Image 1 (cartoon, rainbow, N blue to C red):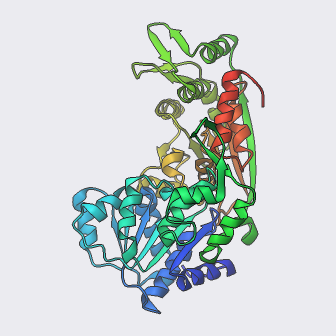
Image 2 (image 1 turned 90 degrees about the horizontal axis):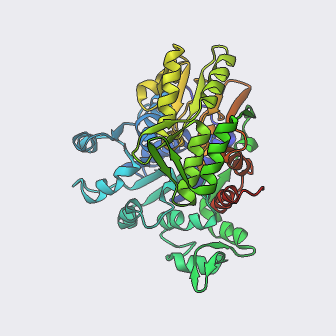
Image 3 (image 1 turned 135 degrees about the vertical axis):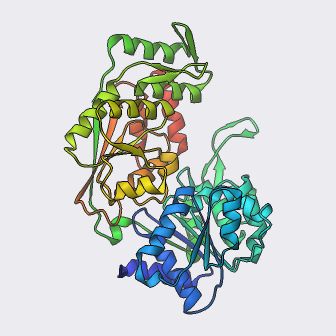
Length: 457
């Protein structure tokens, strides 16, 4: 296929080529992958500024998205990729293969650097998704920092660099510029841009941005950063968001309220406990979905209201493919059981073959987990309807999952996102936070507290 870039895509590729350190903060759907590959191709074959490229990405994105994009575009025909995922033997074979760029999943970056025995001689590294390196205490961060001084060019790609607040930016830019702009140490960064928020005496639990710090941070990183929103550069399909409400029966409501009040729910032959706010919110989410794990790890069914609603929505799609997001394993098991009973063809989108079937329009229902399919997968060719069977507190995962369909290349004029909400439950709290679009993790915590207290927002 012939690549005819938009003006912003040409600009972004040129930015990568002319900036040895580049942070491309580009909203989902704008084509970060093809933009970066175009720049890599030019750097390899036109200006000869790089010779060996490493791309670090989420597993499915590394395995499926990057190779598919290379194969798709005519101007990338000279690029030879080698995908180093799978078993140790498969990864080593891929690393020994002669190629222009090597693609590895982020979970194995520590292995590559510290255990593979392979010489780390990459003169360009691409981090897709950069937000995967927002925690400076992780092994992947520390391993990459060891080799960072030998890397001549580095690119960080993400659509959500600060989903939990500006504090996330420090580690990401520490990897990119080795501390030149936001400082070498997290303590100095906090002192420069933040003030204590929640504390107990001398113990500080969290920080909040100081007045004017957001503008100062953006100014500090501005010379190596480009930031773009999809709506500013391309015609995006209309995004329609709906709530499909289901209602608990009186007895189901009583059970839900009892668990919320007492933290311990006695059930026939089983016991479900919730020791703290975090685990309680998980239990309440499960109950809203219709099943709950017992202390023995078994699944106890509570109701089928969401399954009935999902059945209605699939029927209303009238043959169009539907993407269904779930969270708990028992969500998946119960959905699969219902779809089998209805004789509806489905598959989890967890393999190259299943993703291809979806994009070819041969899969009536695709099942995805936001944590594994949230970043980078191109699913817009397979459908334009997403149903959230179970919600997530993570704004980042929520936005990224929606962007699998609501993105550039979507042929439909509308993308419909349906949220199945159990009325009067924690589902409504989550929706109120997600719909804010700019809330941080603090808002999620406060919402859980409000649910426990029985108050209203």
